[in-house]
Length: 610
Image (cartoon, rainbow, N blue to C red):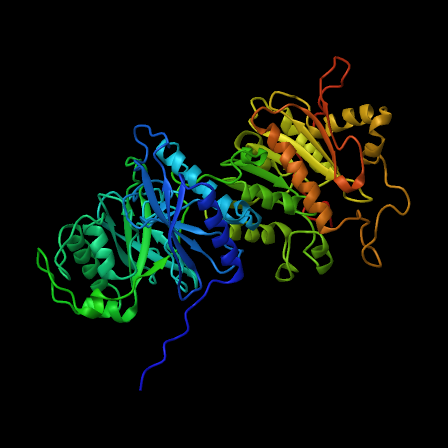
């Protein structure tokens, strides 16, 4: 009985449209383009078409990709228009060139979501291919910014593997043992020392060359790529030599020292193809548990080539996504934004309520090295969750304590401490030790204390006060006292108020200096609850972000004065206004304030947003 052949796969309508467009272009421009064959339909539905481009006229410069008079390519037409066509080469001659992935795939779309428009059809694809060839031949790809990973130009990741976090400033240029410590079910931290009893060893092998054809999917393929980074070399099957032998020795010895029944990880440190002095590209893989245990049973390895059991040699490698956060290879996403001024600073934040709780998180995310918190307020209640940066689990906790936990959950390298509230004498050091002191309490006592700090000779800290209006929490005020100004934010605020109240163009900001009228405040609970301002989390997050950004613009070159700002939905004009402070001879001297000893029986001053 004759077996029936499966039906031949056919191009779908979308692919047929692309094919028709390709043939039409070849007919229109026979001196530039020729269709050689296809389509061949793959099991995944991709249609492969072979073409030839005549590239003799593309200019070439030294260091650029060398092209022949004509170059052949394979165009992969996906079965859906949501994915752009791919361009591959039938050879590996372009391997090692920026934007060549795994030696054969040209990266003509760096970000397909933004760059691929199906309406452009096949002409747009060929235009991008031609531009790619022109840029490559002209040596226009910048090796520092191009998609130029040291391992085939592609990220290696197997579904189900954890993310490896690397932060220590180690360039991994020598063979050594490192450690992986579980942080969660999906995260392992890489370190040079053992962190806990759950830490496991992994060997680190620095390679002398990059891997333009990628690292492969099996241990055998990886060993071949380590010994033969380019396809021009051959070696005896199943025999290891040179670098791969050193790799296997380190891998086996490390596996023996880890518990039976665990997967064995390893790290390859691969040099950049054109920037060998730069920190190494890190690639982490692991062998499944059965192969790892088989590796542990191998007899002590002798020097020189040796054979591997098939269950080890043919084992699949599970590649882990590596979150490389070393400063030498990672650029902060906020590096050019005003809040980057808080990076590596010490910030004193007084008041952890409506504005302070959000401001603290923004400063922490901006990279501050240390944040000192103080808040004398009552414990957190459920009503505060409407607008403050706390959760149900924080109810009953002191605000400063709860906020400290929140900030420490954002960053491992952040230092957070809790200080007594003003007018504690312990806060005097803040003027000389901190980079900025922010008062977000709306407390008269705190404001007077900040004015006292302003008079300290040689103070280092920028002093700032932040607040919002009582009716909408959509208008903000930031008052700054720069080092060298003897008057503090509270004094500057009073001076600015006289100017603003006399300016009709700033009428929408007048309530910031006016006593609340009847009905403008809210009593959140019946009984003796303290009146407070109206405002939601959206209002407080928005206004706190604006005030922190404005303060960031002043951190490097602070100028004393007052910033006024309003959220877009208020319609207030001007939406941002700065009133500089200039001391005048008629200004009264800064108030002399003695530092009282805190009275443990006195009621605490409520912070903003209670």
